[in-house]
Amino acid sequence: MNERLQECVEKSRLFNQREFLVGKEQKDYGRLQKMMKDFQPYSNLWLTTRTWFSRHESWTNGPWEELEPEELDTTFETCMKTMGQVVRYFKDKGFPKIIANA
Image (cartoon, rainbow, N blue to C red; front, side):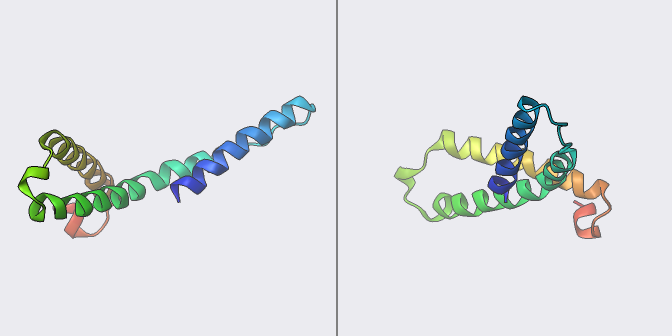
């Protein structure tokens, strides 16, 4: 979904450039930008969850020698920071009490 939204943004810029070049009035694609902004917390939730579960398996069940402490630390910190932002977003939006109590 992120890729498709980004493609739409790129196309909107291209369309506006072409409209400008031929002297046409440029269309407003502000709704597209708002859609991307509104979708971002959901995307962050899904992508961070996927990252966590894919890495967690190797951290807990993989060979000790193959652990990379810097990568583990960076991934852990990034996931925790992102999930904190996501929880605050959903809490502010009044989503279910399970999230609101986090």
